[in-house]
Amino acid sequence: MDRLHMENVQKAFGANRVLDGIDLVIEPGQMVCLIGASGSGKSTLLRCMNLLEPIDDGRIVLGAQDISEPGLDPQPVRQRIGMVFQSYNLFPHMSAIENVMLAPRRIKSLSRDALRPEVTALFERFGLADRMEHYPDQLSGGQQQRVAIIRALAMRPEIMLFDEITSALDPELVAEVLDVLRSLRDDGMTMVLATHEMGFARELADVVCFLDQGRILEMGPPEQLFGAPKEARTKAFLSRVL
Amino acid sequence: MTTPTRRQAFEARQRRRATRIAAASTGAVILALITVIPLAPGWAAVKRSFFNAEVFAKTFPGLAQAFLMDVAIFLWCAPLIAALGLIVALMRDIRSPALYPLRLVAILYTDVFRGLPVILVIYLIGFGIPGLGLPRPWNSPYLWGSLALILVYAAYVAEVIRSGIESIHQSQRAAALSLGLSQTDTMRFVILPQALRRVVPANMNLFVALQKDVALLSFIGPVEIFRQAGVYKSLMANFTPYVGAAIIFLAITIPATRYADHLMNKQRKARS
Image (tube, each protein chain N blue to C red):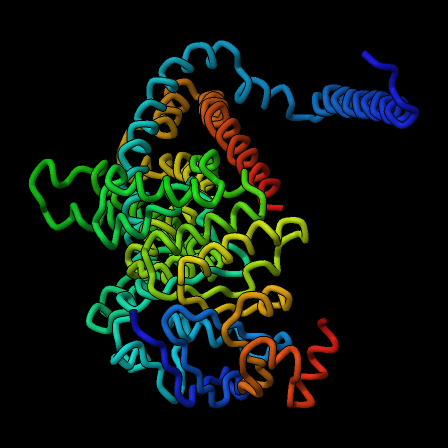
C-alpha cells in the first residue's frame, strides 16, 4: 500500500485555472473528503489522480513513482486507483455482473468461472445478489451506483476515488450508497471523496479539505474544519450548506 | 370492463370522428383520380403500353426470376460492405503517428467514394478493370460491378458507424479507462457495441438503397431484373414489364424501410 502525494498540481482548461497549486498527501487507510462549491476543482483533482486528465505542472507521486510523468502508460496506475462517477457510467449493453467482470477478465486474463465466486461475494455483501443478471436500466439509481462501486472494487484497487457519487440520487437512495462507503471505511480502504454530504464527511473523514478556486484553502480533521474554520470563505461556504 | 371516464369517452368520440373524416377525404381523392385521369387524351395509349394485363402476366415470372440475380448480388455485397465499412470507420480513429498513412487512406477513400455518383464508379471499375485484358473469370462484370457497389456503400456505412462512435458519451470512455482497460479494449467492448446498435436503423436504410442500386449493374452487363425488363420491352413493344419490375422492388423495399423506421422510432422512444 503506497501513499499518494501531490505537489503543486496545476491544471488549466484554456484560460481557466482549475487547479492552482494543490499540495495534498493521502496516507494509506485514510479517508479524505474534498468539499467546496461547484467549479472549485474537486472533480478535476480526482480525475487528475486517476490520470483521466493530464496535469500541466507539479507532480503526483504514488509510492516512489511519479505517475504524472508525461508519456507514462496510465493503465497500470488506473488499475491501482479505482474511480466511481456521479452519473454511475455503467455500460448499458451489459448486465450488472458483466459490467463488473469485464476489466478483470481483460486485464487479469481471468475466466468468468474463476471470477464468479469473488464477484458474487461482492454483490452479496452490498445487497445486490438478486440483481446480478439485471441490466443497468432495470436498476434504481442507488443500485446502479452500488454496481459501479463493485465494478471498481473487482479490480482490487489500493485507492478508491468517489466523485460526488450521491449527487444524482433521490434523497431516499443516498443512504444505501453511503452505507457501502461506511463498510469500505471499516475495511480500511484508502478513499478520496468529492462530496456535498457534509454530515457524512464529518462523521467518517480523517481529513477534510475545503477547495476554493483551485486551491486547498483550508484542511484538517473534520471537527476542526467544521467546528472552528479559520478562513472567512470556509465559514461562508459552511454557513450556506450546513 | 369498467365504465370509461369522462376523458376516455371524450377521446374515443374524437378518435371516431377523426377516422370518419380521414376515410371520407381519402375516398374523395381516389374517386377524383379514377374519374379524372382517364379523361386525359393519351390515357388509352398509356393504359395499353404500361398497364397491359396480358403482358404483365406473361413477363412477371421471368422478371421475378431475374430479380433473384439482384438478390444474389445484394447478398454477397452486403456482408463485405459491412466489414469494409467497419474497418474504414476504425481506421479513421487511429491515433498512432506510425499508422497515419492508414488514417489518411481512410479519409481519402470516404471522401472520394461519397463524392462520386454510383453509376460513374460502376462504369469506371466495371469497364476499366476488365479493359486490362484479364483472363476469365477475372473479366466478369459481376465481379467488378459488385466491387464498385461495395466500395461506394462501404464509404457511407463507414461514415454512419463513425457518427455512431462519436455519439457515445465521453463518460463511457472515462469509465472504461478508469478501470484500467486499454484504448483498444475500451473501443471493442464498450464503445463499439453501443455505437453499432445505435446505427442499425441508419444502416438499414443504406442497405435498402443498395438493393435498388444493384439494378445499376445492368448498364455493364449482368442480366438482372432491370435488364430483363428492357429485353421484354423490346420483344413485346410494351412498357408493362417496367411496371412489373417496379412492383417487385417495392414488395421488398417498402417492408424493409418500414421496419427501419419502426426500429428508429423505438430507439428514439427508448432514449427519451
